[in-house]
Structures are given as structure tokens and as C-alpha cells.
Amino acid sequence: MSKNSKSIAFWGAEAPPYGGMAVHIQRLSSHLQNKNWAITQYNFKKDRRNKYYIKNINNLLFWYLSLWFKKSPNIHYIITTRAKIRFLGSLLRLRGKKVIIRVGGQSMENELNNGRLPKYLNIISLKFCSAFIGVNRDICSLAKNYTTSEKIKHIPGFIPPQLEEKTAPKLIRDFFQKEKLKLVATGQLFDQSEPDIYGLYHFADTLKLLKHKSLNFKAVIVIYGNSKPNFEFNLNHIKKYIGELGIENDTLIYVNNGELWPIIKESNVFVRSSITDGDANAIREALFFNKQVIASDCVSRPNPCILYKSEDSKKLAEKIERIDLNRTFKNNEIGNHHKIEKLLLNLIRK
Image (cartoon, rainbow, N blue to C red; front, side, top):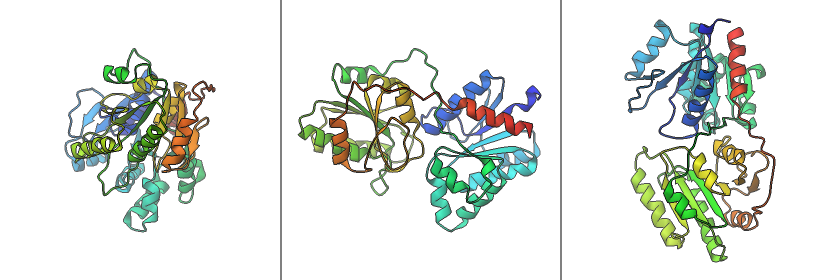
């Protein structure tokens, strides 16, 4: 195998802004670069990056045509929620490229169920791609209905952070201080007409129940996705909601522009209150740092998560109220970068 054959392009760029997909790309890129892989990241956002391995895409049509008529990396790693992008990426098999499609949530299932054009674009992409990565078993089982089992790999997205000296923002450290019960939840905000996917309002309702039970706690709700439309309006809306619940002195809304793990390290309980999910990197990150994790049962969760009935604030409050902060467990979160690299190497050899 020649060194030049170890080249990979990510359809997407690393953080910032921070989010599950961007952090996955960032950490996997760093691992592969240390193993002498040539890395390219395609940045489709309006912000300009000046790192040598990031290509800022100005014109999507010209960029895509260049993949057909100019030299590009041997492997294309596609993380997207859109059927059209999966389809266009999978066509590069006709150009002799290896194409990996990775799905981390319900986007593909929703498109396959709607019976329209996106359904058939997904089916074609599943048949064309070189390999398919699903972050949970349900996603992999769904993909098996449309392509061969040999292509499908169940590989969660978590890759451990590089543990350089980072601390949580002073605002958060001061807020938690010496409180015994320190809770963290995280997610994006959505318009009131959209589902509250991360269950942040549901989490706020839970905190009100804990307040009524006279349980002492401090909770930090970490918000990301501040480039979305209506962000300021939605941010002010949840702050107002927390004020109406009477928990504003116990709850901090923090807009995060950095990595999550330093904040998780300051807490002792991480809550994943999402109403739909793939395989939450934040959960595995919390387990990696030996934090207690309470998560909704909307999908399968890794052990040793404590589960509660999804969207049931009363049940979540009961789980938090009964948490044993002295509980210990073995950390099994070693990351999946080696599994992904093994898949990449196998594709090159074919």
C-alpha cells in the first residue's frame, strides 16, 4: 500500500461551530493525520478557514464537477442529513472512488418513510456506496433493507478528546461552586413550531419539579448552534421560560463556542433529555470522564446509563432525586477512531 493511497476527504469541516458532526470530523482527522493520512475537509459554510487541509467551497456546482474531472482523495467520507448529498456522493463510485456514508440520527429513516424522491435517492446511495456507518443498531438494521450486510458497520461516533489543559469557563465554575448536585444538559434551540428535539424545555420542567421538592442543585444548560436563524429570539424565549418557572437562580443558560468536555468535567451528572437521537457523543463523553448519565429511552443507550421514559419530566425528576453520586462503574469508552481507520484501510486494499 503506497502512502499516497491513504487520502480521505470529509464532506464537512471541523469545529467551530461545535456540534457532534464537526467534533467527530475534527477528532478523526487529527487521529488520521497522526497516522500519515492525507486529510481534506470541504468547508461549505460561509466562514473562511485558512488551514492547509480545509478547502473553502465557493461554488457547489463547480466543486462537485471538479470531483469528476480533477484529482481528488481516494476515499470520501460523507456525513449529512440530506438524501441529495448522499446520492451525489455515492455516484463517485463511478469515478473509482471509495465512498463511506455515515448516518447519525433519524434523517435517513424519515426520508425513507416519506415515499417521495428522497426515499429513492437514499436507496440508490445505499446500493452505490462502498461502506455504510450507522451509529446505532437501529440505523444499521434499516440500511440492511436496501443494501448488503457486508457494507454495513455499526460504529458509534465517539472519539476521545485530546486532553490538553482546558478548564470550564469561569462563569460555570463560579456558578457550580461547591454545590453537591451539579447537572449539565446540552442541545440546540428550535422555533416553537418545531419539535424540541433535545428536550431542553422538558428538562426545565424537570428542574421546577426538583425545586418544589426542595432539592438543592445547580443546572447548566449548554446551548450550541448559535448560527441558526432566530437564535437570539429562541434564546430569550427559553430564558423567559426558566424565569416563569422560578428556577432562574438555580439554572444557567450558557451559549457554548468551545468543546463540551471541560464543562462536563465540572459536573457530576449529565442529562440527555432528547426526544430523538442517534448515538449521542455527549453521553459517551460524560461516561469517558466517569460522570453519572441519565438519558431518555428514545433509543438504546450505552451501559451504564440510567434510563427514564422519554419526555416524562416526573420520571426524570425521580431519577435525579435518587441518583447515587458515589456510584462507581468501569469506563468502557475507548473511542472508535481505530475501528474507522481499520475500515478505511480495508477499503483501500479492495
